[in-house]
Length: 105
Image (cartoon, rainbow, N blue to C red; front, side, top):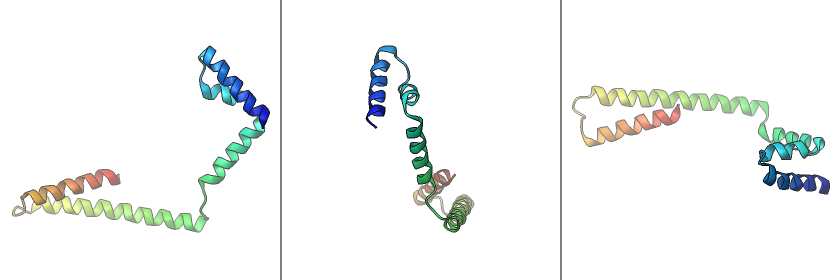
């Protein structure tokens, strides 16, 4: 491990004089086994849920997404069609529904 850290620090010194990209110098001088370990650790941390839980979360997220779209569109339609409701409160709710719709998509 000390040789890898030595290589990385010497690459950093070379970088300051040559002007190359930091990540290119570091990756070129790192031990391939160390890179494989880093990549494996990164990939192991990406999907930490079991498959049934992942499928359940996807279904729940899709349901929430669709309900948000439908609900906000309905609010916009109702506020635009109701002629008696043209006050400041209606415009505030309209703006909130539009902002929520933009945040949802």
